[in-house]
View 1 (cartoon, rainbow, N blue to C red):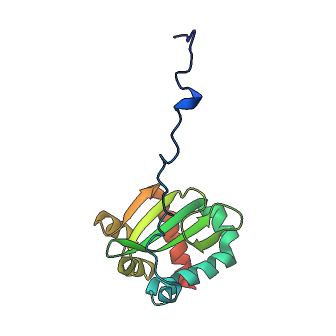
View 2 (view 1 turned 60 degrees about the vertical axis):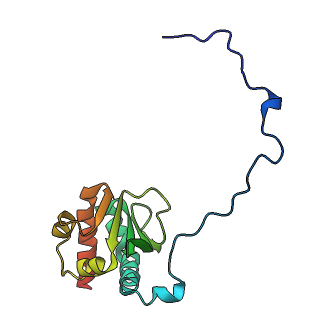
View 3 (view 1 turned 180 degrees about the horizontal axis):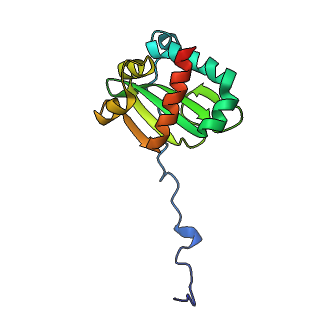
Length: 156
């Protein structure tokens, strides 16, 4: 183990930046999200609204079963056009537009047509993932629990 002795700071108060040495930066650009009027034109938007209502009805039960936060990034031409977060870890569950407020356990990046096929049961999620049709980061195994949520929603 080493021991520090006789250490003196080499930075002096007058060594700071001179006036005018800083560059004023602009605000951070917003992600390329569609205008709210365009959102209703997306097929997936109405599906998300339906799932949101379902989670409000049975969210407390889902929190006990799932215990995870999912972020879904819906893409078009490689750019994120829509983000939704499904929080089935806190309170009685919630689903809201935008990125996860708390760190997401699993993040899905899915093109909109693929998402629609997945939620409508036209495509097997595991086969689609292995074929590279969408990306998953974080805890990949939790995606099976989200699949069950979508299947329960589809029954209604």
